[in-house]
Amino acid sequence: MTHTASARFLIVGPQGSGKGTQGVLVAEAFGVPQVATGDIFRENVKGGTELGKRVQAIIEAGDLVPDELTSELVRDRLAQADASAGFLLDGYPRNRGQVDDLEAFLSGRGEALDAVIELVVPRDESITRLRQRAIDQGRTDDTEEIIANRLAIYERETAPILDVYREHELVVRIDGVGTLDEVTERIFAALAERGLEPNGSEAGDRSAGAA
Image 1 (cartoon, rainbow, N blue to C red):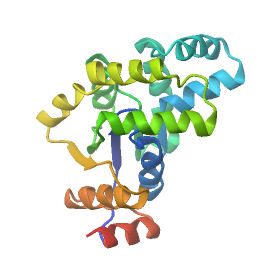
Image 2 (spheres, one colour):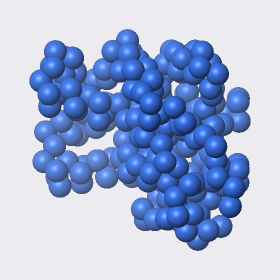
Image 3 (cartoon, rainbow, N blue to C red):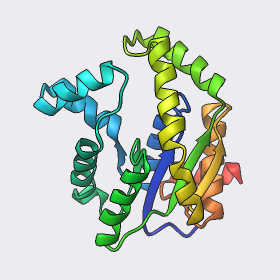
Image 4 (cartoon, rainbow, N blue to C red):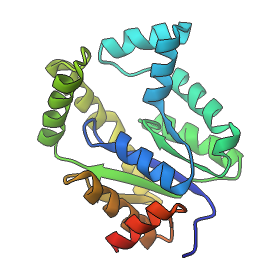
């Protein structure tokens, strides 16, 4: 098997699509860090930093962290050594302005995205999953109103960025309904069709099973 020299991915999908879980699996398979803005925000909140306090208030209101704060955190993260050969972005970019910021950052380093993984999940399925997660985890920020607000923001702001990446033929559409393994296998199979082969043996087994 010919392994991919670099792997710079973006995973996109509505809340409840499972993109966080799938992002971890893909990142591990390709040996690159998963850069999830949600994790970065939570680390700051847990650490009680000034940024964390601002982020916490915004998240509890069901809104999104401002672009300038998000972009600064992402640029700093991608500049770290472990992201030099690749990364998987989860939660950024989320609008056209951030798409332009990311492209400018990457082009300045002579880099570009290799693929944009789109997890396709019906709205009612996302709502069902998020409601169940709220029950299972006791998440106070997952009220029905906030769930609806998050999905509306995704549909209004984030979904349209896929049109930009489609123009560059980067989007890989994946049916996000099914078991965890089924969705993972679909992702690896679709990436393999583009010549993007995972590096880990476990990932190789998954990819072979999905072929």
